[in-house]
Image 1 (tube, rainbow, N blue to C red):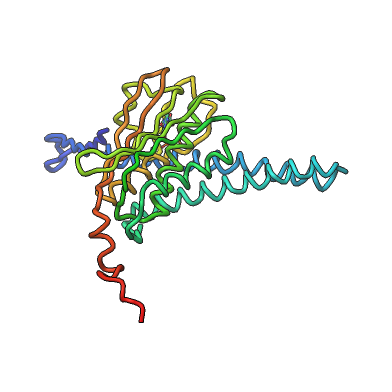
Image 2 (cartoon, rainbow, N blue to C red):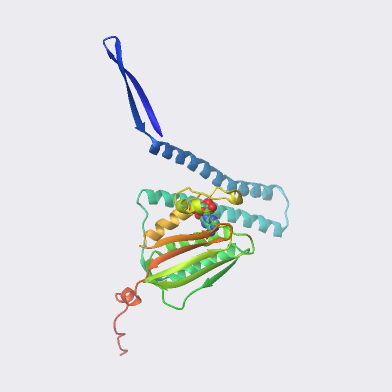
Length: 273
Ligand code: ADP
């Protein structure tokens, strides 16, 4: 995008020429566009769960309801409030990422356990999908911030569920390859159009196809996932067949358990006296 300034040049009263100055304002233009997209995404995404919270609270205050119905409404209010908290946490994460203030508390941990926790949490909220976890029988030790990595898998699994039809299964496969532990999160859902693959990890990017227009989101999830994986010297890739499904693969460097624990575990257990 170019901005053009035009200035006439005079010698005395006589016009002797015109100076044209071009300034490339593509970056400013993009930033402005992103800002207004951000504001409209945020407002929309916050308004939807808030409308549920307000609506159901009002119903409960004004109507005489049976206990089962009250429980149902309260569960909806709780879930929507949780969704709001998740959204706000995503916005805060992105802000911390941008200002370089995101901090990681790393320790040795087994990736399998982290993934198992993420699966358990998702399985509770997503009863419509079956999550299948295939772990190898190896010890997959990594140096990581456990809460942040759990967030990576929670995000990937919830996307797999969100972008596949009810009743489909989501598979997670963990295996070792070339000094890395890899985890494939596989779904059999909408898939990703080829032209979108490159942009998928950009902030606020959402695939704008008719097959998913009604599915809510901010386009921040994958940007946060990629940032966390990179902060662990890892990598995330995606392969997808549009209309068939997608596989997101997270690779993280393996560390030897011996190396990890040598500081914490004494070489010899002292003999009992
Ligand atoms: P959000 O889900 O909030 O839109 P994400 O950053 O998590 O944001 O994902 C960006 C886009 O990538 C989504 O809008 C969606 O269209 C596409 N996408 C992500 N995961 C999947 C998946 N498992 N299957 C199909 N499309 C996906």
